[in-house]
Amino acid sequence: MPLVPLKPVLDAARRHGYAQGAFNVNAVCQAKAAIEVHEMFRSPAILQGADLANAFMGGRADFANGTVEDKIRGAKNIGDAVKLYGEHSPVPVVLHLDHGRDMESVKAAIAGGYTSVMIDGSSLPFEENKELTREVVKYAHARGVSVEGELGVLAGVEDHVFAASSTYTNPLSAVEFVRDTGVDALAISYGTMHGASKGKNVKLRREIPIAIRECLAHEDLDCALVSHGSSTVPQYIVREINELGGQIGEAHGIPVAELLEAIPAGINKINVDTDIRLAVTRNMRELFEREPELKESSLAGVWQLLDEKREQFDPRAFLPPVYDLVMYGTVADEAQEKLVAAIEAGVKEAVGTLIVQFGSYGKAPLVEIATLDEMAERYAKEGR
Image 1 (cartoon, rainbow, N blue to C red):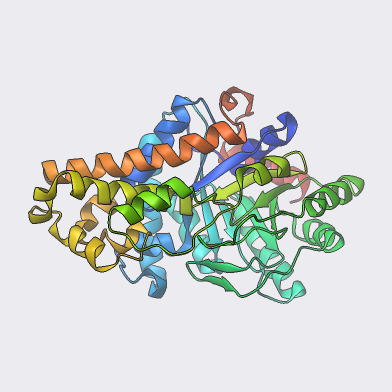
Image 2 (spheres, rainbow, N blue to C red):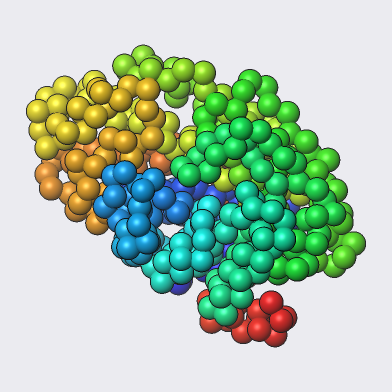
């Protein structure tokens, strides 16, 4: 089936009481693996490309400084990969822009084939956030593309997103924001954090999504709630990376039990990035440990970066020497085939575990499929 917008997938999660994981990918082989593991579990799939991931996929190793041209090129590369493996998938597949910075980022993503976009105006004053989000909704809904906004500030670091402390989402402000913008989903701040160092034994403030959900229902507003910064940071993977020469310090995620209790409190979409980064990096280190001769192969540059950047766990720090593999899925030789297999296995391990824990396995048939054209007609009739 063609790639689908976000809204029907989250509508199913809300109706049937489970959460939909949303997983960030940064290479063609990661997109392939993420789709395959969703197919294995018969789960709907939300693949995410962050704004700066588009710059990376556009060939920009220093992706924090990516230009609009880099992002346009990268969005098309991600879009082409997800279409290649997702358009004929038996499960519905969404390609969602994570943390879009501005209208240019949104337009680049939609032109590249994204079926859903997130615009992050959370650092702006409330009225400016509303205005930016409303502008994105108008542009995206006319094309059948779903929109996620954000209200409240999460502490931590993820790509260009940084905040030293959290500002929790006010339920009454959330109602005004949803009513005035028409967003399909709203990312809220209720105790999660970006990055790998969230602190031990994090407790989520479930009363916040509960209050927001009740307030939205009272005003008859239709909007899913999203949990950003929700990686679980499996401690066994952190230990294994360090045993293989990595130097990751204090790294703790959101306890799975806390996330599971947030689902009946109203959370419908749970964003995960760090868990995948960790599993892929562990597998890359393990590959060179198991087959040291690969250090002298076409992967020599990858190994050099792994060895130099021991404190890093983001695979984007190590993969620029094999950029054709990253951007286009071009595998030059047997050594690169082994690297692809290691990356894909890491993605499947991290994603498959959370598909089961979040409860989306077997739920693909519950999604009422709508194409972008059908969603555009629906939005127009609803005046959104």
